[in-house]
Length: 161
Image (cartoon, rainbow, N blue to C red; front, top):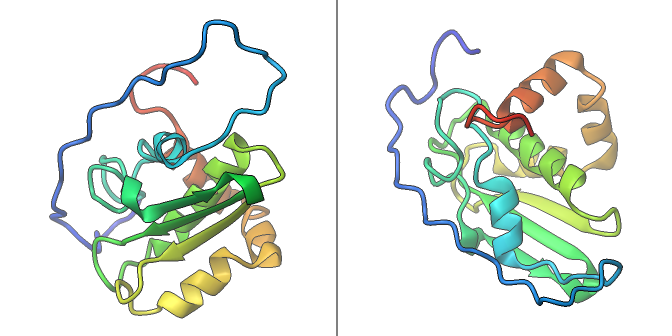
C-alpha cells in the first residue's frame, strides 16, 4: 500500500480478550439498546492499520479508555494515538474510525474523532479535517481514499462480513 513505511518497526501489543455481552432472554427487538464504550471499542478494534498488517488495537492506536460515550445525548468521542508524531496516515486512520462508526451506529449519533493531545505534529489540522462535514464528504468522494478505508475496514480473519 505504501512504498516507504513511516514507522517500519512498530511496537505490537497483545489483543485484549473479547468479552461476551449478555442479553436478556425476552428481548423486544424494537427497543432502543444503549450503546456503551465496550460496544464502540468492539466496532473499532479490528480496523487494520494502513501501513501494517496489525489492527489499531494491536498498535494501541485505539484503546477502550480513549472512548467516551454519552448515550443519552447520542454522542461518541474517540481519541486515537498515532504510533509516531509525524504519522502521515493519521488522517486516513481517523477517516477509517469515522466511516466505521457511520456504518455501525444509528444516524442520530454525533461522532467526534480526535488525535490524543500532544501525540501528533499537526494535531490541530488533523482534528479540524476529521470533524468537518464538508471535508469528510469530499474525502469520501475520492475513490482512492475510499479504497484505502475499505481495505482497512475489511475483515482480516478470512470471513466475509
